[in-house]
Image (cartoon, rainbow, N blue to C red):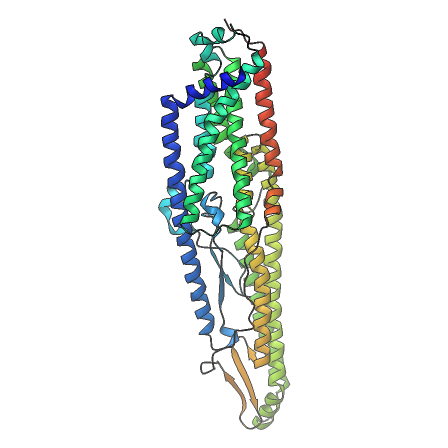
Length: 488
């Protein structure tokens, strides 16, 4: 009997104009979004490779290690085709210098403001917004609509239990929505591979996890549609209630959670942090300037009473030591500025993480938030992407700075110029304009941070579990309510 009821429900769904319209809309949206995502990925890869070449050429054209300037770039992620996450919001490039902190700039949205205005539609958005709405559209009258049409009494005129009837309703709608969705996703994956997007074994695991997550999310909205349909008498009322629930859960609650966390946990803005960094930097360089001036005044006093020849001989004898002392003081200032910047960033980062935990805890009341957070974690385009890249870039900056300073020391270079001491001509300063091309074969290379598939999935376990709990609660509530449903 359950088989016959499921077949009946499937026929009603597949032969209805609603299914044809929704399937057509989903087909256009999913395939178009994937095609555009693939095109954008190839564009990002081309820009990444071009920027890498420019950075390499800039380094190759340097004439001394003190003038070497470097910049690193964020590597495109194939998973951004399906789950863009924060890919378009986070910067793509950062300068690597001992004089300034790492900061990702030039996000795709900053270069393409039109896309920032209307945002990018990816597969996550389609599942989160469009498919959840379609699931409501197919379930809001699943029970009360049958009562209004009089078919509910007719069905129970046969030997059908309420549990069997509800299970068949759930299974029929689930198969009618999920199977076409899986077919479209498989076609989208075929398009992705045919268009040359390199998908690794780990990416396939992430894609499979994302598909499973999407199935859970749509299943929840099927369950809540059945639940509301069993607790209301009129289909018009159930549709209105479900629409209010959908708007609140998908559109309002996630944003309200972020606003609430901002009020509960205050975090200094980027402008405030940069102002503190600039103020400390200015103060330290002013202090350094005063100290150097006082030091040279004392050195001049040491030479008072000497004639020109004695003064010149004394300078020749002390010049190298003085330059090393001044260079050490300058390096100490740079180190103090770097450590202060890191301290401020670490303090702000800790506050941001606390704010994020509060926001995510509040937002996860909505299954839409759990779905989106888990999808971004699986794809590696989550909120931690920016900090992962900047932390790895800071580590690289330390290695790069140590390497260039070592090379400067080996060549007698100080801050971009070379000092040559000759017994006859004295001290000569060479700014390296005629130096030969630098040997960069030993220079450390930047490697993008790697987020393992296991770590990405472990960060999503909570959201998978919450979606499972939401499904059990909605279907359990629908079952209990339907057992007491008045069919008259």
